[in-house]
Image (cartoon, protein in one colour):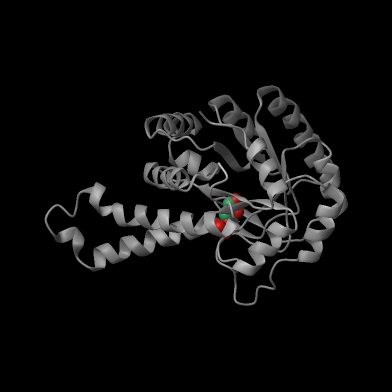
Length: 287
Ligand code: 13P
């Protein structure tokens, strides 16, 4: 059964560790992440961007696949199925389709409009027992066509949105989706510290987990980050392993062309990446 992310994140914030959100693209991705979470007895959040939802033919397909897989693999750790960077319409469609967690990204709206729309979704999610992530201050870089400038959020605006009753809050602290550029200035811990001072117990979310150095991840967790999103790093791990399989000519040997063989090294590489992140985030054994 899919669960809201509320309980796992409340525990993570109190226990000073973070739960990973790993984005899924297909069956292999989902299976690798679920099996790793179960093996490590870690709670997990499966992220689905609107683009990935479309790619998998729609939110109903995703929801049915994930729910069935959790059951058929005998997964016992808490699993939340979460819409990543959702629009207002996308959020409603995912609630309808059976997602257990939603992100409404209203960061590109003027703050008053972001607040009004987030508030409406708080009421809907509360009634259904679904967790809701809001965003203040856009995250930099480009993800599935959603482009953000990478600004630092205003701590007062963070407090206004946190007070609406959202479950978790994503706030820009100089983080960027995808690979970090050479001249990246790093996370703004000053901003994070100020946001936590205003928002107290609210679990904070760090987007753009790919490529953030370990010491920065640890410091961010110590300053109230309880959920960390990782997407590109799994994609790169999958790509590298798949490239090697083909470059080594394995697809030309015997039945090496069988998709179950062709996709296996990539799937194993995703498992290794997810394991590394769960260990770093401190969520191992916390299920
Ligand atoms: P990365 O692709 O940089 O890991 O970011 C993932 C993310 O923040 C999803 O919302």
